[in-house]
Amino acid sequence: VFFAETSGSVASSPDRISSGQRGVRIMVALSRIRRLTDGWLGDGSLAPTKSAIDRLAEATDAVNPQARISPAADGSILIEWEQGDREFLVSIERDSSIVFIEEDATGHLIREDERPFSSEELRRALSEGTAA
Amino acid sequence: VTADGQKLTDPDLLLFRQIHPAHYPDGRISSGAFVPGPNHNSLLSVRHESIGARRAYEEFVAAGIKSLGTWAVSVVEVESNPESDGISAYLDELIDGRPEAHVSIDFTPSPSRGATKRIARHLARRAESRGCQYRPGEPE
Image (cartoon, rainbow over the protein chains, first blue to last red):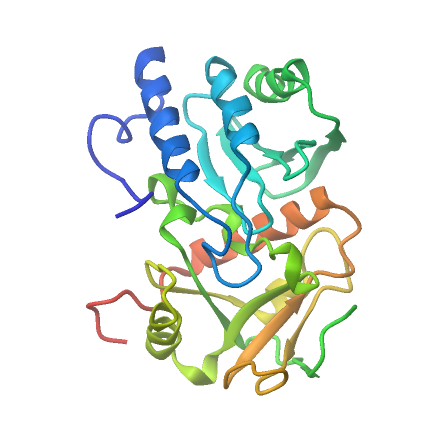
């Protein structure tokens, strides 16, 4: 099925994958997002823009190895992962702004902010979570 | 703009949501599954439990959209989100051509895009904890 690979060497042990495997895993996810067109989730749903996909592709090395990448109907790309007792979400919005959310395992908010896009800010958002 | 229709108040009532394959990376439900589209006035489409999880799935895919199956959140889970007291579900079937048992979760009170993502994440967690309500090929 489309995005739902749950077995196999690429997805089965995300905490032990090499940087090369991580890159492959992320690029596979991005190539599938790239195939989406407006209306993919019904009337009014938007596909992520090519520039947003390209910008995330350029920051692959900053993405947590356990991160799950998916689109949303508002045209954003979500990167979600857990580390320790923290859960992280980075969203590249349709206008390329970056939303960062950090919660504890119970859903209590630790930090939430929205930043204008830059390559540095995207890498910082992805790395801040990984470094926490 | 807010939702039309009748506000649902039964806390245990289930609301069915279809999960697109893109929203199931590594076997986890993405927060993206519960983010409303921008052209729907911040309304997220779900179906009232009275329609049945199997029929909800079948009608969704009959419209040409992919789904792995039907998952669910409850009315109280919608209202107990971490960001806004005003997020509620409205039965708006047959209004403006919406189908039988159509329910809209109104995200209009969400104060920001980040808040909308947090609410969506909250709902995705609840749906994942409850488990799939119907998968094609399985009896309801």
